[in-house]
Image (spheres, helix red, strand yellow):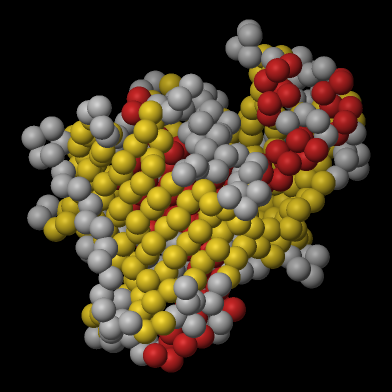
Amino acid sequence: MSGRRYKEVHTLNYYMCDRNQTLTMPMLVNLLLEVSGQQSGRLGLGEETMTEMGYAWIILQYEFEIQRMPKFLESIEIETFASEYNKLFCYRNFIVRDEQGEEMITVFTTFALLSLEERKISRLPAEILTPYEAEFNKRLKRTARPASLDEEQAIVRSYRTRYFDIDANQHVNNSQYLNWTLDTLGSDFLTTHEIKSGTIKFAKEVYEGQTIESYASIQENSEKILSAHRIQDNDVVNCTASFRWAKIES
Amino acid sequence: MSGRRYKEVHTLNYYMCDRNQTLTMPMLVNLLLEVSGQQSGRLGLGEETMTEMGYAWIILQYEFEIQRMPKFLESIEIETFASEYNKLFCYRNFIVRDEQGEEMITVFTTFALLSLEERKISRLPAEILTPYEAEFNKRLKRTARPASLDEEQAIVRSYRTRYFDIDANQHVNNSQYLNWTLDTLGSDFLTTHEIKSGTIKFAKEVYEGQTIESYASIQENSEKILSAHRIQDNDVVNCTASFRWAKIES
């Protein structure tokens, strides 16, 4: 597969982990974006350079496959590469491995380039992709669609954006969407279940001062445990997501 | 000064920093406790060992002096040592230095030992302090008292504890108290001011499921800009704090 590879090792500390001594999903997203941000910086295409060029990357979707979530004090290797791009989208993969080199997590992400002047998605210029050694393929990739919310049984919680939700990139930190989405499921469910796979699809950015509603429904039968999610502010949907879960064996 | 010294270098990444490209107070606290936790682990007195011995450290107070907050991408050295202890309290210092070795932040913290069985503060046994090379001094140190809230002009915001607020130590992550305290001041104030010093004093732990009220008042005159804070749930005060601020020169 094409794409220039970059990797970093991170050791998980207590503030990255939940009460089950396991890396949290919000912190996983922080670590992934830290690693891809480092690659961009080293290729001379960091945040600042992109801004000067009039662009900003936006994330449209994450698709997670989780064999095992890393634990407190484990050292993990995070590898990333931009695999392919077309006129509109760039696809970036992440592989998280344990100290024995075993794959623990794979993440497939879809990025697009925002033109800061026009405030809309820009056609991807080859010169921005060349340093990443990503391959051009005009065919758009098929991406997963999150499972639909069960409106009848959905539960809802409100979240107000907070000052520290805005990070150095001037936007609500990407991990907050995961925080709002998952928190709605409540601790009885979250302490006894673990995520095996998931898709999160971003539709519209949440801004400071907004209070969003996070809806969630859980479907559980002998075949699967599936949660579906929607974050919205009045009629505007900010993101949708779904996760497949397994009971934690104790 | 006595106390076995331990230090680590950390490089600040985007999720640790706010919109002003500056390390956030909640993340500063996370980094400090990560470093002191590492020292304890290396001395054979990590969280797990302490639990087996029937103890847990609790933090009673932080006193911060900030010459300059570190910026995005800076590498900082965090040094810590347990300086002194008496029957009831152990005092731990932190010094944050920049790449030139200049002191940026000093933090003076007061810890106590909780007996897990009795659920109360335990007398400090010498064998727990010996590895830290902390000096016994029977005199209790004088610690700062946070400035009082101006009840008349106080503003208030509610915060519900969330699932991911509980960290691997099984408690509301210490940094959340800073998050709730400071967020109440609002972004107009926070984007234009920086903390020069502060004191945060913990009275009672906040538990999962609780919704707390965060009160804040600002006193501003030609001599100083001072904010005072109280976090409480009904009649129970969880913590009090005050911070001295300066306007950010732009």
